[in-house]
Each structure stands twice: as structure tokens, then as C-alpha cells.
Length: 312
Ligand code: CP
Image (cartoon, rainbow, N blue to C red):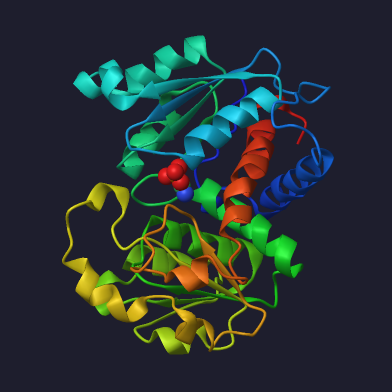
């Protein structure tokens, strides 16, 4: 009997001990590369002869480059497939796309719109599928964020993370992470933009310590980490009416001042300075946004190794 592929679809769909192993491997991989040029291929070439197909139905800088470099550093290769260039963009089914790509490549990473497209791809693929962002979640990003939090703060269990702004796909993955890693998460969003009841139910069922408020000061008070994201997600460009609702949720020096003095500021990037965060915060000493961006590479190498090589 052929074993089922090891997909990485969401933080909520992996066992906590597996997620801890992935993070441990990511820290070790990062340490092992210290001082090496980016093009240095790891001597044991854990993904030699492996090919990753990367499907992008939305724009990307970090996800696209970090997955490509991850494959190269591990001795493998990747291919970039734009949604518009695939027959998928002209009506070929997700199921047929999954079956065909599985005959050519060893894993598929997809950035798409509906979560159902991701899960359908995983259902019909016979190779691992990795979620590179959907409208619902962004698990690779939040795994990199959790890795960064571990680097800066150590043990996560006594930490408080505060989110200020729209509740979006990244917030949803932070909620999953709170359930799996045991930190407290406070979300400040205007009432119409608060998390959906389904994910709040998931939090209750999984003992995730997540609180939701309309008051950004209350959410950030005493927090160890403050997180912001763009006010308009990729699929929402042009819907500027959210801006007025979100103005009170801007992370600026006054809001950072109510967090712990050694609190870090996180943002998954790209950022809009002067909207969700002021330049003095994102470019200031508490910001760790470029460590977060770099850690996409290390954590995704560990995810690829977990999915593909059997070394994790
Ligand atoms: N944070 C993130 O996913 O960046 P990209 O959209 O550039 O991939």
C-alpha cells in the first residue's frame, strides 16, 4: 500500500510535537548555515533530485524566493507556475491538475484564493502539498513568526502576543499557533473585522487562549510582541473603505509604549508605512520584521524536509 503524502496545509492540521520538531530543525538549519553564502548547497543534499512545483495565483516576493532558495540550498530544484499560465486558469479542474503534477514533481506549493482549492489539491495529489497562503490562512508565515519569537524570547508559554488591525488569514494562523504553542493571543479589531465564529470555536475546542477586543490599547497592554498587517489583503486591493475603520488600530509609538519595554514588533511584509504601522516603529529598534522574513527560508526548509525527505 502506498503511504499518504505528508501535506503541510495548516498549523491546526499538524500535531504539536511535529510542529516543534519542524521548528527545532529550522533553528539547527539556520545555525548550520551561519557565515555561508546563500548559494552554498548543504553537503548532504537532503532534497537532491527532488523538484518542487510552486503555483502562484497571487503575487509574492518572500514566499516565492524563499521556497526557491530553500530547494536550491537542499540540493533540489523548483519551478514557478503562474496560475494564469496553467490550464487551471482556463478551467482545468484542480483534481486533474493535482493528478498530472504528481506525475512530474515531488511536491507542490500553492498560493491561491479559496481554502477549498488547497484542500482539493491535497486530496487528489499523490505528492505533498504545502499551503503558501490562502484567503483563510498563512501557516508558513506564522511558523516563521513563531521561530522568530523563540529566537527573541525563548520559551513561548508565558508570552502574550497582541494583534492590532484587520483579522485576516495571518491572524487565523496566529490563532492556530496560540492553540498549538501555548502563548496568549489578544486580537484588537473593529467589530466588523473580527475573526469568524468558526475559528473562534476552534480556539475554544483546542484550549487556545485567544481574546478578542475592539480596544487596541487593552490588547497591547503588557504584551511581549505586537503584530500588524496590511489593511487590505492581496485579494482586496481597491476596497479602501476599510481604512477609516482601521485607523485607530495603527501600531505607532504611542501604542508600542503600552506594551512591555522589551516587546518586539512583527509584520509579515509587505508593509504600508503610515497606514497599519508608522515608520518609526517598523524601522525602529523593537522591529524584527527582517528576521521574520529571513526565517521564512529556514522554517520552509524544515517543512520541505518534513514533507519530503523522511529526515524529520
Ligand atoms: N509575507 C509574505 O507572504 O510575503 P509575500 O506575499 O511577498 O510572499
